[in-house]
Structure formats: structure tokens, C-alpha cells
Amino acid sequence: MGEVRRIAVEDAPPLEELLAAVERGETVDLVRDDRVVARMGPRPIAEMTGEEMLATMRALRAGRTLGDIDVRAAIEEGRM
Image (cartoon, rainbow, N blue to C red):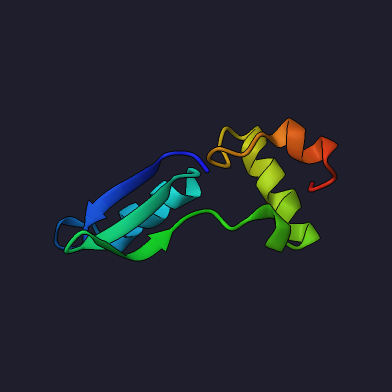
């Protein structure tokens, strides 16, 4: 997995900003007292339906990323 951004719960931006980061392919840990209480990140490819994979591929063509996923390798391995 790629780099995970850690944010203290009390310093967290509004939910809409966190969701926008996840849509860009980022993973965010919300931390309280040095303990991760929540992780937000892109949905794993293995859990996607065919329609969701197609939408994800279209988003990639539009310039969005899947975080640290190597799309070419995923296709070659049959995950996409």
C-alpha cells in the first residue's frame, strides 16, 4: 500500500474534504491519542463489481488514480 496520511481527529477537515481525498486515491488514517480509530481509502479492486471496475477505469482515464495500485500489473494478473 502507498503512503497513508495521518490526521488527528480533532484537526480533521470536513468530511467532504476527506471524501475528495479518497476519491483521488488517497488513504487517510484518523488518529486519536496516537491510535488509529478509522481508515478511509479507496475500495479494493477485488471487492468491486464489474460496473464499479468500469467506472473506476473511466475515472482513471479522466486523470484520477487508484493510490498505489499498478493498473497494468493488476490487468496482467487478472484482477481487472
